[in-house]
Length: 444
Image 1: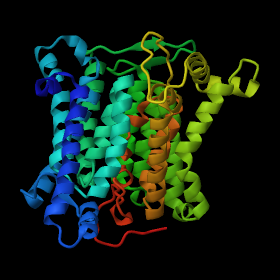
Image 2: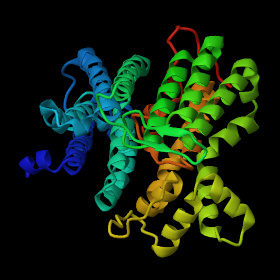
Image 3: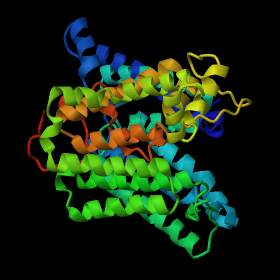
Image 4: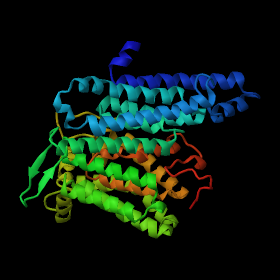
């Protein structure tokens, strides 16, 4: 059985966490009963509230620091894998490529598993809350086999207590270097690229990647990481020049509509928050922003369900989203609702709207959990005053109307902030990417 855990990919990786956390819950209970002082009620309270490493306190702070470096290294390997190895360099048949590609996923997955099980402190309450979320997502993955649905779970869980700003810097450097290497290599003719001539005479180029929209979302991801690192309140004129240049590149190069629209939205939101910072303070604004994931889910499902060729408004929206309402309507009308997700591999539906896609393939329970958790994260970020991360998350939600990358942890780095929701952490432990100045955090 143990051998099968190493040979079944993500199934085995999820089982490692399942076994580790199940034993960890038992260990926490036994530890509280044996070591905690007082009566049974005091022992239960200690088991629920004392935050400790699973299976013993060996290593102490060194163990906690090692866990942070494990998360950072896993992010670096993931960014390199997706932004470099996932390019058309794979078609060169280089001798090192197959070896490296086969081990990269194992390496960053094992780092995440070690971080989650052995190098993170938990209280009984924290572990029980995250265990429920993990159990649902694992159950759904066994049914739908969607790679990113499982990987996003690993990164959301492993980010607990990790040094996020340091990790963001390393991830951004790796991502930029990987993208530039691919773009330069394709421009020089060293690797292949996709290109097509549009009717209006414009040339569309993927710059070394397997599809134009992938190039667009990589540029969008780089801009989101850059903004999170710089922080809205510190943005200068040259930062907006960088963002505007990325927008022009996406429009003139890969011509990725989703990336162009979302980059324009990112620029608009950062300008608004930079020069009118008080706009995020009213409660109704925070409530509206926090409701964005649920509103996006409702709009996606209603628009897809109600779409007909006779509805002029929905036909126009379908044209704007390049046929995505029609495609989602077809999938929704021809499939039944699966509470715990489904594969539908023979049907081969194309559902690029992430909200409709997860409703079909992950089911309503996991969808409500994910978007509800994201809404709770936005509320906590907005209440903390973390407007940079809130704006970037809203941009990715907008991207979810057209693509599925909102749940890719290598693209949507704001997913690393999810532990405060999944583990029910107190308000002072709501994470962000701002530098630690030692000054008290502004709270709206």
